[in-house]
Length: 605
Image (cartoon, rainbow, N blue to C red; front, side, top):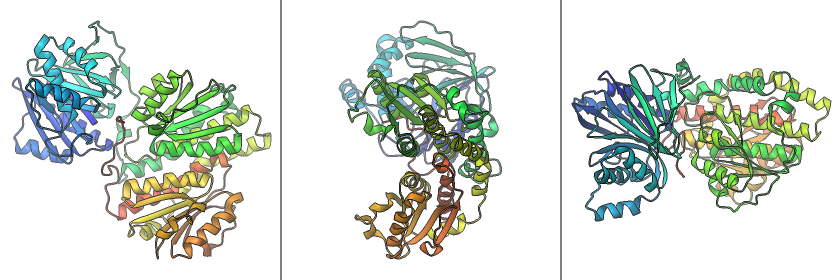
């Protein structure tokens, strides 16, 4: 994986369009890039290790021409190290392709192909896929039958844009467990893993589904089933705007997206409770027969689920398990008819989370997908689908989508509390009032002045620790992840009481420790744990709710956040953690929006 863009049109401008598309996909994270253009009936491949700018330099050095047809790719390495040889596109015989996903049986296929006389120049599974397609085509000389056969032979996940040397005006495409869409322009057609790659040319698109094969040229797309039957597809229009994928006046997408978090909350409230908290009884489904909830996700989405677990168990008293998706599907979960499996994903294409969803569905368990993409695999396949409404998120390290996940799960927990009559009228009124003030409180935290100074105390160090209890521990997990993702500082989060069971041995003079304290019932214990690390020389940064009597001598620096009902506390408290991570990464000179080794949409397991 990571990003695909392809173009077929009347004008010979393939390199320009493909480079623009790759730049639009840079946010997904990658380590090399390449493109193939058809020039005078011949396929010309140019590749480069590094960034799209390196590919542009390579094109200039090769005096590469543009054609009317081309495919391009940004690669996040899965098979083989990130270098020019392993970069896409890959060619074998008359087949040149770009590929997102993982071919799980590539070694078996490769061994069979070597016995047939094939040789390979890269370490990738993608070159093996090209050889599989080429071998099949040599036998039947029919592209539809060739691709249908390859579809059955390639195990795992894939999204392909494919050129055949004997058909220089067309591009072929197919997908399985990895996203791919077709953009419909005027006398030009696009294929991409994300609409942002061609949004500056058209917002009209066709969704390519599993078991479908597309042939694309300047006139549009012909789509057939694996059996060769024609499929009439509906052309859709995206509501994503070009300004949604630009930074505006902000230096980084991440900072822009943090500033957009209050707007995310406003949209969620307008969608799910336009007149008040009790609207949740109508705007969310009936969960009356649910007795247990499993929350399954990866990365930041899983940490949003951890917050929800605290709320659902402590405030609603419903048993809730929160587990990382890559472990859940192998843990032999205990399924039963009164279970709801909630699956959280920003993209809706996270491979491990999709696999967990399908496992639950196989056992007849109701599934609920919470995603930021209504056209995604999870949105289509889950029994219930709810949209985060965060808008397009470009920075690899999620902020506003995570905020939307936390907020929606808070409303979800409130819905259960209403259903179970666990909120009285006074509590409902307080929650309603706090929700009405939430956006302005978030804005105040975003514009607070002290994040740069706090970051200066963290940036010189190689380690940082986060501690909290209950809800604050769940917040600590995301705070630590955000810092390590973009600043490359080793950061770990612990239940505050656990530090003394081993990890406190790592505290030395000046070691940054970020402590979170928003729960009055847990304050005394948390303060004791803070004093334990302070006594060992830690530099303590305390994030505390404004209703708590915290002695300023406990911490070296403090950030005060508004005290809110526990259902809402996590929505605001995360903002300082995000901005501390951002400012620390800036001071360390890190690449904020495209951290090394990370990808935005993880479509492989």
